[in-house]
Length: 287
Image 1: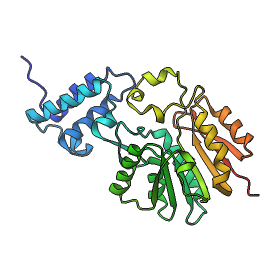
Image 2: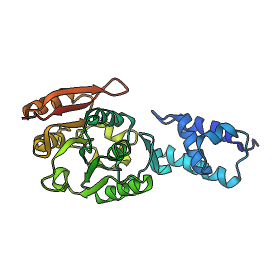
Image 3: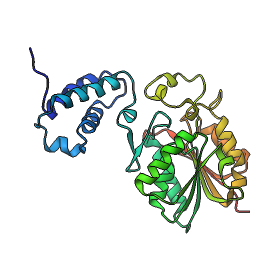
Image 4: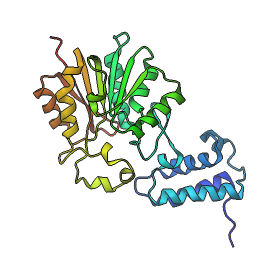
């Protein structure tokens, strides 16, 4: 009988073959991340010591994690972490898993904030806190307010802020602007709101079935929350302030029309790493 793989290299190669059966999975990366989680070691350890031997318990634990992944559990939920903007964020089934394309929002925000000292920022629907924490890490002089209707998600965001020692963010529970302190005006509003249509077939694919539906779906056209955020943004922005939104790749034209209907200027859409229209921004007139 063939002996089980017992070196780091052998175990990882066996895992890659199994994980390759998952559609759209990055089998090499996921096999490495799961093994690092079992060993509590960085990925560099796998390259430095590929012939180290795994114990029987480590092999069993690794196989258990692989089976969870094969059953459809998102890898971010299995290991409890997701990297965003080089920050290690705790994620659970109560939060949206931060995605690389959302980093475009952070990039655009930092450009607009470049010349502003001590900017006031609001992150609407913060989830795990990814956007607010990225901005807070880059702009420690900023005053950032982050809201979410899910108190479970907010607990994760607050935990992430404490773990990363980012102290310039205040978190508020409630729907969109209703959660924010009354009378506060912001230099920049930013959000990755729900934007998937209620009947979208993608909701049954990949990691989406394991993520909170309230963070994904926004009415029959996917635009209900986006419309609300844009409509009330002028009440909360300083003159000349910016609103930045992530949206579905097929929604860019509709989102631009909503911005323009509410008298935003300089409305532009930007492409994500895959070349898809992903972020639209607009400026409140200065007068």
